[in-house]
Structures are given as structure tokens and as C-alpha cells.
Image (cartoon, rainbow, N blue to C red; front, side, top):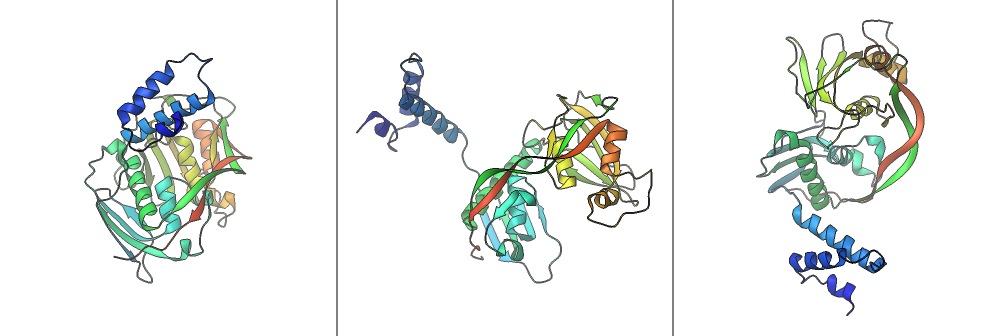
Length: 308
């Protein structure tokens, strides 16, 4: 049995793996062969895997949704609740992607809907809520839906975000993801720290303190993530701006959808601009349509879960 085969023996302890990594890593570069580099990489991957145990729900109940159920909803963490969600919707939430980034799969991933109730002992820090929830949901999909997928990069329509003529119209921030309370009479939906406020005029308001352009962690996706969600396209940051910023942006969702061609155009109203106009006028940012690389999840295998 060669050294590489002995190294991969499952009976080896992490201590012995790290000892070999230590010995290999001290070799001069001219002696560290391809096999040595492979061993070094495997040792590091084993160490990372050992330090990050897979999260999973403690109890899970899955049932087919009743016919005529209301719109899908996903909420909670310690008591995780899903109502009337398709597998495509579950994948979208579990991997924090848009529907256009999901490819393949059986024909029932849209037509079959499920109610899920699950419990976990995890006490996630509020700032880690998103990463904890997505990890748990990914495990559930792998275990109960037998989901297998792989990632690809495709050239698809995207929006490129740049600084408009005259420069940015927002300020650097000393804070980090402050969740703002809505003004009296408004309703707030919290999206990863950004409070999206709704009033009777269908005006949509982004009010976020300490948000980055692209996001530094899974729990702080950044302005481009927020824009991608609104426009249902990947938004690529080419502003060159780094750090954290304070944003306040008001726009009209109906006017934006009309501009994209998905609904009839409303009457012109300068007080309720489209997202494109608001970004330019209020933030000094510009969106342009191009083609660019987009990561896509391809479903290789999925099964309907056994109900319990």
C-alpha cells in the first residue's frame, strides 16, 4: 500500500492526518511533488470538514399541502415551518438564489407542494440566522427529497451596477446592518438587515444602515443582492466602491415591473419612480443590461418525500 493510500485510510485519526500535513508542509517547494500537494490539500479539507459539523433538524414532519392552499410561506428556525411550498421554492430559499438559477429536475418540482414542520436545538445568533437556516434546509432536502445537484456557470442576461455621472449620493457608514423600525402606519419586511417598507401607494422603501455593495458574508448579502431580488436578474457590482454605506431609496414596484414589461405601465408619477430612475436620481448609481456569468444549480436527482 502506497503512502497516498495509507493516508486516505478511514481508520486514521485527525491527529495523524495533521501530523502528516505538518511534515509535508515543511518540505522545500522543489521537493513537494504533485502527490505531496494533493495530500496537503486533502489534509486541509479533512480538517475543515471536522471543524464544521453538518447541521440537521432534530425532528421533521412532511405532508402534501391541501388543494387550494394559500401562497407559500417559510418561517422560523428552532420551530421551522413551511406551508404550500414546491421543491423549486425550497431550493431557492436553501441556496439563496433566484428561480432562473435553477435548472433541470423532474416535472413535479413546481406542481407538488408540501407543508413541513421541523424542530432543532440550534440557538442561532440573529446575525447567523440566514446561514443556519439555509444549512438546515439543505440537509433536509438532501435527506428527505434525496436532492443531488451541481453548479454551472452560464452566460445570461444580467444588470451591471456602476456609478452615474456626478458620483454617488450616499454616505459611508460606521454601523453594520442595523435593522430599522418602520415609521408609524407602515409595514416592514426584513431582508437580511434591510428594512423594506410598504405604504398604501405601493411605494417600496429601502432603509438600511451599514450595507455593503456586494456583501461580505452570507448574512449580509449587500445592495446587489437586494437589487437582484427586485429585478429577478443577477446584478454585478462594477462601482469600485468598497466598505459599508447608509442607503435610503424610494421607488415604485409597479412602475419598475412596467418598465421590465411584466405589467401594464401605470400613469407617470415623479413621486413614485421606477427602481432604475430612483437609483440614478437618489443614489447616483446606474444599471445597464448586459450578458455576464451567472451561477446556476442543476438538479441531477430528486424524489418525492415519504410523508410522515
